[in-house]
Length: 112
Length: 113
Image 1 (cartoon, chains in turn cyan, green):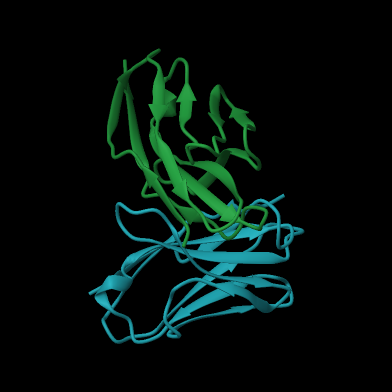
Image 2: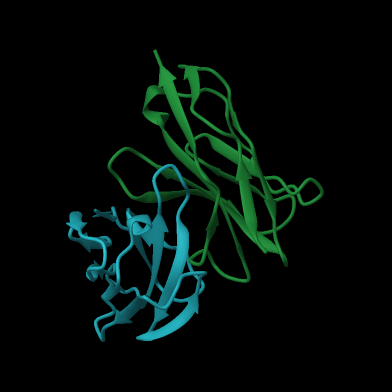
């Protein structure tokens, strides 16, 4: 059984650009949650997808958007990147909406 | 709103010392409480959880008791090992099973020989 995998592991983008981060959920899981972890801070909930529909959103602007595919993998898209978007982005999958989250290793995004 | 406050780190201990990492919370509603651990270069792992008042979560020698009267969920371990060196996060969720979490800022633990 494979765990949660995220790609890429690191990337560098320029302010104003757009970025897409990817997450493959653990086998048998239909729910994916995304978190942003700034350096030295705890993760902050961005949003959750359940069976391809958004199922809750944290306090993030609309330029943070997501998608979940029929195989339950997911993408996080960030438009008009800002320097403060530099962070570790964590994906977590769950068997369903109200069960334990299993985290991937994250994607380190640096905006310059 | 919901928030979690943890003691600041880093916490540096000698091997076999007693560990306490304090965590207090504010929540609108009745939260479930969690401790996560993040080892260097790895993702977050659930260490233990408690879903109602006076419950004690435990795992790998770590324990935490849900104290509603003091809104606290302090993490303890009787004898730490070098392999326990990591960042520990306290978290809560109201009305869910643990996948829309509010985290504290984390406490780094360093255990030395």
